[in-house]
Amino acid sequence: MPNEPTDPRNVPHALTREAPKLVVLAADAEHGWMVVDKPAGWHSVTLARSDGSPTVEQVLRRDHPELEAIPEAGLVHRLDQGTSGCLLVGTSTASRERLRSAMKDGSIRKIYLAGIDGDLPSVGEFRLYFTSRHRRSAKVTVRREGSGVEEGRCRWRRVPGEDRLLEVELLGPGRRHQIRAGLASLGAPLRGDELYGGRAASRLALHAWRLHLDGRLIESPRPDGM
Image (cartoon, rainbow, N blue to C red):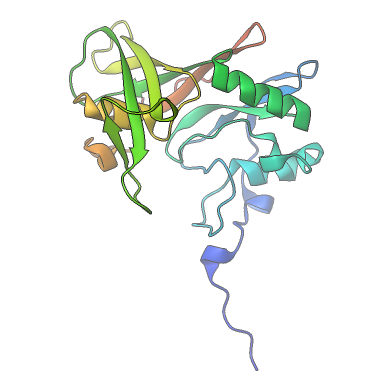
């Protein structure tokens, strides 16, 4: 009996051989971490059913075999596929757990650049509550009231000289689509974020710009299209 054709959605992307290397923005052997620069369009972790896009996790496993035994190749957090920028990796199981805790308690500061459609005050903040709309929905529901486990907080300021570009600090552990859905609920969806009402663009205008951790500031250069 001839072999049936393989469903390409179930085949790991050829990135293990062909994908470019990830840029390492900073590394700290003493504290057990590195920060890589995630390109827009890459997934953070390996999917059960591949859509053919590269994943940071697989490239880390390819290029850093010392991460093989660590869950998700040491990734401490995730970024949406369309989001670029700083992605933190723990280089041991112990350091990954320490960093995950620091993400939750706010010890690590996370600052994004967000290009918006709409008008917001030059400075502001929100405290909103984020829940899934229903199973298999790509969107999340945003409410003004909710439980503590649903809470998401951000503060922003306008980047000088840029009417529609914000510097947004994610406060606390972060929720799914917190910046995207939160700003859209205030009437300022991100450019390129058609899921939440933003106009079409070449990319999602969200970039994980800076991380502050262990007394250091790590910055990913502002990409084209932002």
